[in-house]
Image 1 (cartoon, rainbow, N blue to C red):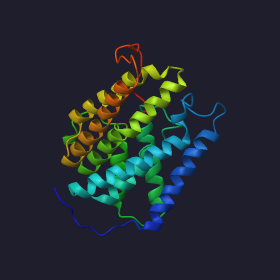
Image 2: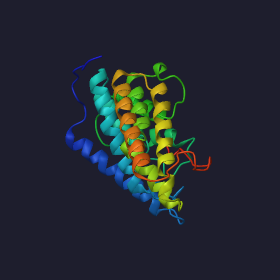
Image 3: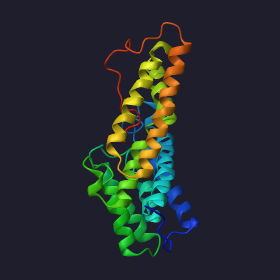
Length: 238
């Protein structure tokens, strides 16, 4: 583990242009569909939520990449493009669609090394991989871990509580709903492999456990077992 120094092929200005492209692409994906886009029946499937998720993943992935010695530019650019097709393609093909969009952008908006473009597109294409992360390139590993971690912790808790309100559940369901975030965190502990990601997930799960304990202590008669078993845990998608 450690930082590997490499010359960056992506300037700050170029990265900002990519950021604006992704933002505008997501917005257009919603505007171009008569019914408001795929899966728009919850607020967090909006272009605004998806772009915020992408920026969160960029920040986390970049942190993991720097600590683990991965290529930071490959990781952060792949993170920026990883969900660009999420609102227009079906879940099982959005990664491949995103890789095609990233390839087209990178080959028409700059003179990036072919190896750089290939690594970015491979990471985007593989970011939905469900197997052992140790089998993947380090940059892809950093991206997947960041994607997992964005649903764990305070952000994941806020999204779960938002879903609770949107489904007209009462605040008495809150502790159980928060428990679903803890379950996701425990699953994340088993999935991530880098030391940096393991540290982040332990910290985030600890915060959520504290919040659940505070809820149970402050709300009379709150029982974490009262919520029906059909409460979903897939808030925000992947």
